[in-house]
Image (cartoon, rainbow over all chains, first blue to last red; front, side, top):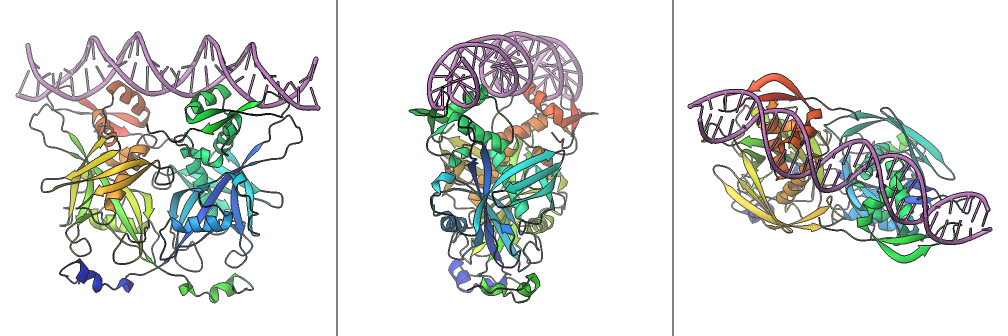
Length: 277
Length: 277
DNA sequence: CTAATAGTGTCTATTAGACAGTATGTT
DNA sequence: AACATACTGTCTAATAGACACTATTAG
């Protein structure tokens, strides 16, 4: 039976906050960026890679597996402050683009305790991270192979390669339009493989109707570089004239050029900034 | 200093789950539907309204204000089970379309205790709710007025009318493309006004690239009814031929007709179901 | 017959896709 | 000169917007 109070102050004074069961909330951050691969032929443009930041776990559970950077939410900080704090610690940067991705809360997603995880998506220009990464963190390039309803994701860098697969099903009752059933995953901790798939999906969608890509770009960039970033995220080739037509309203041409590649120099552009439509 | 364990079992056996600070998680549900208004002229089509289900609070905090239906997450249920349980209690239906909207976690959003709120968006055909609503629940029609960067939302039904306004700003760092600053709000509890704006925004976006509208439609409907639902959600008129061209691939014409309106009968259609593209 | 909605044909405007061509650097 | 990328012009295809027209009912 609920008590009746005279006013809000009386209610709050008498309130016992332990009457409801409590749990912990963690945050995972998908830090996406773009990497250039080294090139043998001085004339060729370096190939772009889509990459994500992972951390190697040094204790149980999932000891020695890779996982997304993250941590527990403190009671005195806003929800979004937690991923910001982790990002600042991990990259030394305070102004990284961050958006909430999804909150995962299966009963058994953590073997230790009941924990809810709010995943965030962060986009950064990797060149801004001057400091060395923490010892246990590393960038992994992402390659995706799709066949019918099966997706194969491979994560690789100089030292390590691993992959996992997932079945993509139409499901209007869950995450956006698709549901993912992660099949083989021996290397990513917790439900991080699922988080990664949902994040890639979100980025792929939003790249088409927002300006978020520019958070992965340096201040000055060529249109071809920008196009390559769209191409690795969307995982398909775009036609130059069409791309330039569409992107034109979002960028500003500068008087600078990038030269030295054994071919015609390319103009450098800047992001024009958000426009209210 | 972190202890080192021999294996995962040893770690879990020794694990003290109270070492991290704990909090409560609640869930709010934005139940959207569509209402017909009664008509004086037998020939005219009934006007459609976009509506949301609200509950009147009968105790502190925010006593006598309206709020979204919701409740606390139990430790033994998956995150999504909480809104499902509340919806089942509130509407007596178990198969309502439900998707996660956003997780709100400002430190002071609840005056009682630190609480994180995961908001869900639910869409339902109001005609399916045969039982009377619980005594403290009511449907409110939503009307929106936009002027420049200001949005005025009015909620009204036979007994009650109230409204609140919000300033819409471009902000690439938060909820989708826009940020809302709720200005005057004397009737909705907690941050429910913000949740409502974010939910309307989400629905408006997703209606264009998903089939979620059909969750608000009865099994059989005319194309004009469907068009009206699009129109009240998007808050603008659509042209008949264009709408029919586009929607055609999503619906199936049946051999039934709706007649009796003093004009040409209209064919009834069914939803064709999700198509993998 | 009238007022109202149902439904279609077709022209036009806009946007996207494709291809071929010209431009201009470094070695 | 050769190779590679930079950049543009223009045709075509597909899609969206607009309008006018025909069809059909209850009263």
